[in-house]
Amino acid sequence: MNIPLDEIEISAIRAQGAGGQNVNKVSCAVHLRFDIAASSLPEVVKERLLRLNDQRISKDGVVVIKAQEYRSLEQNREEALRRLHELVDGVVRLPKPRRPTKPTRSSQRKRLESKNKRGLIKLARGKISD
Image (tube, rainbow, N blue to C red; front, side):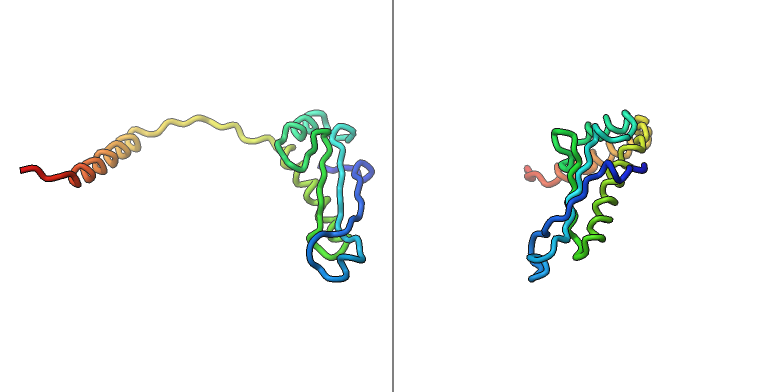
């Protein structure tokens, strides 16, 4: 699903963790914010996104993604956009409906036979009486 770039707010922030002087000087991490309610996505997709139990979606319905994997701002920007598209595409596709199945007679019989066999093995471990 294509999301217009004007609906996505991207800001550069300083990355966390080790990295030497570069980390202290350059803002190369990316903070992406995407408001689901204010977007041009279809209503069905919006509802599914809001129903998702994902830690990246706030209570206000804003997707917040932080990308700081790479040392370049542009690569982190692309990574954040890729993650957002992945999240939205995962909701667009409908899950296949589950068709309940029954175990076959032979599989039920084999299961019961193996249980019985195992029980006999355990029974043989008991005390021997004279």
